[in-house]
Image 1: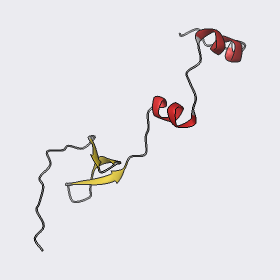
Image 2: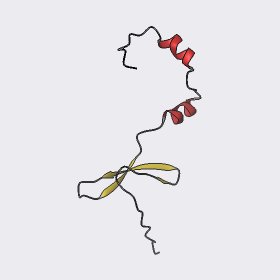
Image 3: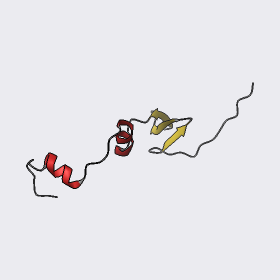
Image 4: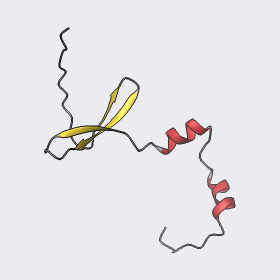
Length: 73
């Protein structure tokens, strides 16, 4: 049974999807690249998975408005 080799043009920092799984392209010790399971997800992905939604500005102020601020933003 022959196996067809597929060449990919990827660079360290890219994310590739194989099937339904995502992988980070990372540097390996031999100056090449390797694939590792993605360990980061976007906030939108997490909220969607948990059935959550972003807080409105009013809701945010109600929840966190009494916390001290440093005046930088």
